[in-house]
Image 1 (cartoon, rainbow, N blue to C red):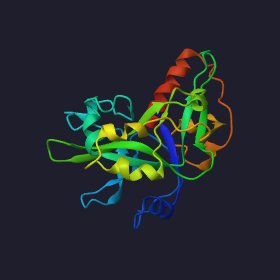
Image 2: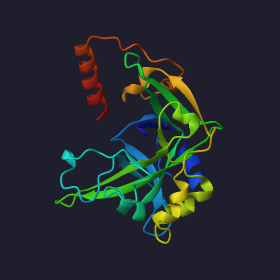
Image 3: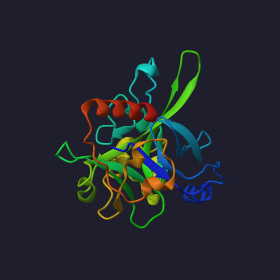
Image 4: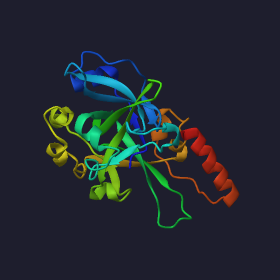
Length: 248
């Protein structure tokens, strides 16, 4: 899965990458978390690429009450064409989500050991683009919320040492085909929903600072080890509750 990522590219760099005239200003983002606005690129009403911010956590159009619906951060690419939550977006609203890299946690078989966070970035640097889906949820009062999610696939052998899932990466030469929802059907882009090649990413173990969404500086990417979690059960539960409040 992908539950945290970063985007440090400048607006000018993104405008050049996507062939846009201009991109709205924003600072480097080192710890993007669920429910936060995320930068997406799709095809606008005029048939041209456009940048748009959407809330991370897709809400399908058929949901009655979003407050009682679990936000969909990721979609399994293997089943997105069939699942009711994603199949409409797969057909009509495919987007690109640029990133400088993402974070993933290795979970040891020994549950007494702490999870180890990793900063996973392109080996050659630069910006990658995740395959994404967006939906506009409309309330009975006419209010609208633009939401989105990231498509994932089975990890390659390298990333599988950390986690069994990874984001789908769309290469620049495939941008047009992925974004073309007018003439290109989901079955025609199925070949793009594959793991990144071996060596495309490199993984760096980082400290637990990434766990808190309020830590937003570049230090969350500094090499480090997970701290021991040998606390009384009551303290563990309390810490878990606080983290959830911080995240959502």
